[in-house]
Amino acid sequence: MTSATERANTRRITGNIFKGSVGNLIEWYDWYVYSAFAIYFSSEFFPEGDSTSQLLNTAAIFAVGFLMRPIGSLLMGRYADRHGRKAALTLSIMVMAGGSLIIALTPSYSSIGIMAPIILVLARLLQGLSLGGEYGTSATYLSEMASSGRRGFYSSFQYVTLVAGQMVALGVQIVLQQVLSEADMYSWGWRIPFVIGAMGALAVMWLRRTMDESEQFTKMDTKSKESAGTIRTLMKHPKAVLTVVGLTLGGTVAFYTYTTYLQKFMINTVGLEKEVVSWINFLALLVFVVLQPIAGMLSDKIGRRPLLMTFGILGTLLTVPIFFILEQTTSPVIAFLLMMLGLVIVTGYTSINAIVKAELFPTEIRALGVGLPYAFTVAIFGGTAEFIALWLKDIGYESLFYYYVAGCIAISFIVYWRMAESSKASHIERELETEKL
Image (cartoon, rainbow, N blue to C red; front, side, top):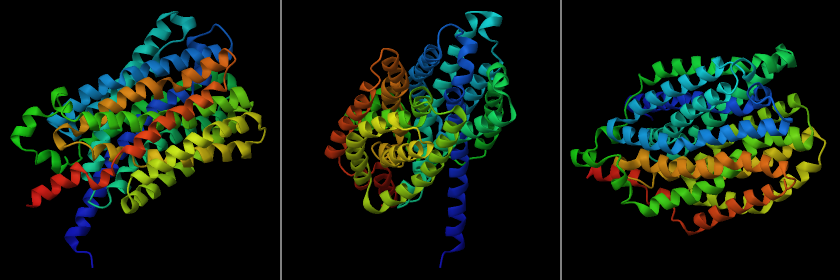
C-alpha cells in the first residue's frame, strides 16, 4: 500500500506541475491569439493589398517575434540556472502580460498611421522574449519536479498546456464568432482575446509565486552555481547542443505547419469557411492534447527514441500526400481527418521533446541548454514556416512548401537514428543516483 508520505509527495509534485503548466498554458494562449485572430486584425494594421498580402505582413511580424526567442532563452535561461526556475518563470509571465496588453490597446493604422504596425512589432518582440525564456525553464522545471520513471509522462504536460493554450485561443474565437457580427470582429472584437490574455497572465504571476523550487536546483553545489547559466559552461556540451538543434528542426516545422499554418491553408487554399475551420482546428487539437500524456507514458516504458523515429519516418513519407489530398477536398470531415493524421504523427516529437532535451544537460546548465539551441532553431525554422508557406503561395509555388516540411523532418530523422536513448543516459537520473551514494 502507498504510505501517507508517498501520497503527500505525489500531491506536492502534482500541485507544482499544475502551477508550472497552467502558466505555460497562458503564455502559449497569448502567443497563439495573435495567429488565430490575424485574419481579423491584419487589415487594421495593414490596410493596403488583398487578404493574402495582409496575412503575409502579419505572418512576417509573427516570425519577427520568434527572433526574440533566442535572446529570451539566453537571458531567462541564465537567470533560471543562477537564481532558480521559480523566479524565471514568474518573470517571464510578467513580460508576456505586458506584450498582450499593448496589442489590445494599440490604435489602428487609420488612427495613428505607421506607428500602429511599429507598436505591434514591439509588443510582439516582448512576447517573443517572454516565450523564449518560458520554454527552456518550463521544460527544466517539469523534468526536475517529476518522479523517477514518470518523467516522460509529467513532462508531456508542457505540450498539453502548450496546445491547450492554442485551444483556448480558438475557443475564444469560436465564442466571439457566435456573439459578434463579422464587422464587429474586424473592428474591435479581435482586441478582447488580448485583454483576456493579459488578465490571465497577471493571475498566473501570483500563482507561480507559490511554487516550490526544484530540489535539484536547491541542492546544486557552490562550485556548480559559480559557473551556472554561462555560455562557457554550455559550450562544454557541444554534442548535446547540436542534438537539440537536430531533433528540434523537423519537429518545430511540422508542429507549426499542422497547428498554426493549417488554419490559414484551409481558408485560403481549400476554401472552407472561417467558422468551420475554427471548429476543425479545435476538435483536432482536443484529440492532440489527449495523445500527449499517453505518448509520454509510453516513452517511460519503451524509451524516447522509438517515438522520435516513428515521427521521423511517417512525417517524411506522408506530409506531401496529406497536403495534396487536403488541397483537393471540399469536405470538412476529410479536412479534419487529414489534420488529425498530421497531428498524430507530430505527437512522436511533441510529447517527449522537452524531457529528451532536459536529460541531455546537467543541472547547472539545463535551462539554458534546453532553451537556447531550441530557440535558435525555432526562430529560424518554426517561426518562418508560415511566412515561407504564404510567400510560396503568393508567387504561385505553394506545393513546394509541402516538400520543404518533409525535407526538414527527414533531416531530424537522421539525428534520431544516430542519437542514443536519452532516458538511459539521463543527467537527471545520474545526478539523483550520485546524491544517494
